[in-house]
Image (cartoon, rainbow, N blue to C red):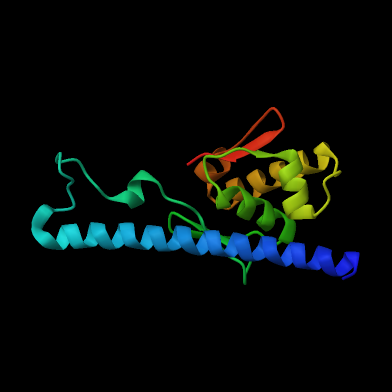
Length: 155
């Protein structure tokens, strides 16, 4: 096997892993929503055991990302990001919300280049935030935070 073939297999394996994780997260959220709807239909009025509201969609909503149109859907709004890299950065951050992603991880996962300049990544994050703000998704833009060479989508 050549180096190039091994590299392609590595890239495909990472893509498969990412897609499987996304599918698992989606399945988990679907089960949560189904349980909520089930509870509401059962007469509990969507209330938990302690009487508090138990709608998980209000507790932790995640952006929905459409790879076919390079769009993000958030709180009833849809925004076409228009640039593959901008979309991929958001996808990478949304894959593991509330967990920091290092510059090195972003460079490797989005650009496939671990030696990418930090300024390039900062610029792309700034562009992503601007597009989200301009598209009416201010709270999603604010949820993308940076700290000491790491970024997080804080939901």
